[in-house]
Image (cartoon, rainbow, N blue to C red):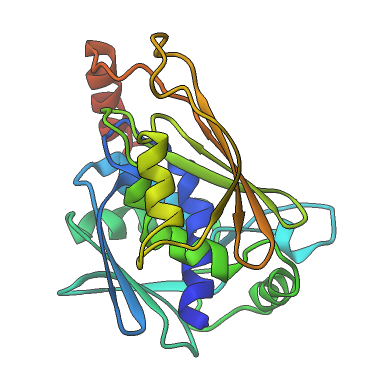
Length: 263
């Protein structure tokens, strides 16, 4: 359960990174193992910068009084560098997520910058009291359901379409309801097959569907309402962005990679 909860918390943060690559969330490959998930990321500095920025916990000022509003990142997350890659973990748990596919020094370089600029919590060897409080409140809610988000992270490649722009975003929209959006996802039949059918599916069910995959107008998006185990609703939209690579995309990618370690 700790592993699934860790993966669920991570997914909700990293889906915000966006992508100018063909890999959703910058993820090239996933390999589940006992008590850990190995994730190979695309070898782009800006992806590594965004991952670190969105998951490393740090404290910021807020007046709401809710501990969850005082912390950015994954509560309790710490990291260490090993020969296998960047190992993400929580103290007191066997759960691990290992990041590979890039120069590990990039991660340390970004983390060092955050230590200097923010009130970093990931420098503490153990959970801080604030993180424990925020984590307890989150676990008592349905904001990060492991049974939904962990299996989705492990199958995130199934949301990949034929485009140089691929990203998948999911967020909590209301009680027991999530929104999922792809910039250019696969054909609806392919997605439904991956999520709803077969021995490796997520056991989701299609409640309603409007498919435009065969439409002459490429800009026509698709919408599917899924029902996931536990009564969780997932409202999915495929935005079907322009699939053609452009010079502007490559220019923007170069700018982001130059920015990744800059000011």
